[in-house]
Image (tube, rainbow, N blue to C red; front, top):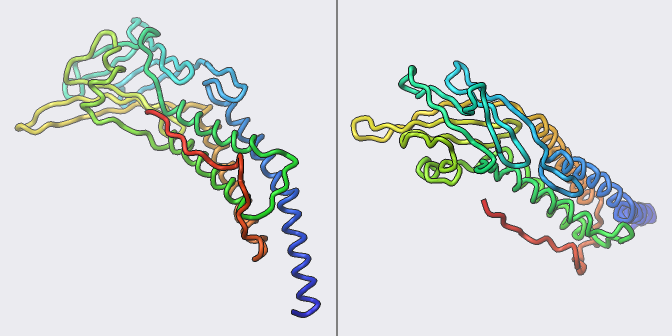
Length: 276
């Protein structure tokens, strides 16, 4: 190896050591700020955020087959009301002259599990950064990449929980605790559902019927935008982008001899499963 090559190799090694010593901590600190800001947008208790934020939304379909005025408290729909004090109204899908009404009240709230699931994954991501002492000196690219991969996994699960809802089968929905808590109960051939999808709260009414011996399901959907969801998804996406940038930089700048995997100690990522 020539003197110039040796000097270049030494410079690259010095630069990479600076990245491990200084820049990784700087970016983790920025990530932490973004994720805490994201946590404080959630309407549930999360990382110093007291939660239990209450919002009211109006969901209406076009044409107006569905109309629902709901109160979202934390991760649950605790009430819905209209001028007649019966909160959910919709025209039966193939009997347009028939109006069905039902209600949700505080005694039987409709829980939106997606919100709590996303919050749990976000809490986990923040915890990974909290476990890194600010004076800790990283010793290899593998060590940093391991933490980044843990962060990316948690953030992707948090985002997926909000963007891709786990929809229940119609028979499971009709037997659910949420349906049984409606007052008054709906006819046996009708069901409703609420869920989060991206930045919107979705309300769907389903009607079951038998056509020539075959089960048929008709549906109608109403939705509305939820401002805090837009903020949360934007910040999760920004955090994922920051993680990917750091991952790419560490991979690019790492020297060939920095491949030993040290004792990761508290940095080991635990996989946590949450009940739906």
